[in-house]
Image (cartoon, rainbow, N blue to C red):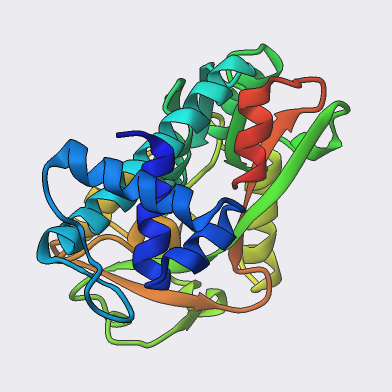
Length: 295
């Protein structure tokens, strides 16, 4: 049994004709008939019923058609992977991502890339945004997924892609007066105790200033009880009814049956978090370049 025999058999089965199958591969009908006969002799089973017009597959032939297609697909995949390895698509890809982004679609992107390039080891690192930016420039990461708390786009030598504008939501405890609302504005949160999610470790970053400006535009200074870049801790404190918080939707969208938690969309201009994929322009590694093409 060889690859050509599988290809010829599939063509005959699909065209229901030796002549049309032979024309597809630019060989004689006699040659393709001989190859199918050889395949049947090897397997010691009749695959094609030649007594009918158009020709049909025997029950064994129908089973083998599915298997032959699967074998060719696996062989093509194997050949592609070998070629990728021979052209340098091996090695590692170090990915940093902002805290909370593990609940986004990032895992699906990584899984898809891993299935296509299994010879590339993907390692992941969860950090706050200022550490991500520093790690990128220190060559700790090949690419980072971050919201721009450091004004990283002003740095020379970086390239980026906008991944999403994640809408913001208000995290409330179930007994809160706003818990039944379909939406809220930042202005309506004036008298609330805020558990503030910061992207950075300092709480005084470019990104922090942006979101604090949104409070000022709403006409007040927020009553911030607690600052943290740990979304899990913030959600626990909201559930304990210590305050409310504003979070990006990717943190909450996959939470089901969250104990004593309710999430209400925040409406208004600028009420989103911009997630960027950022990498160094000088990094020309094939693994990174192929990954960038697929995000």
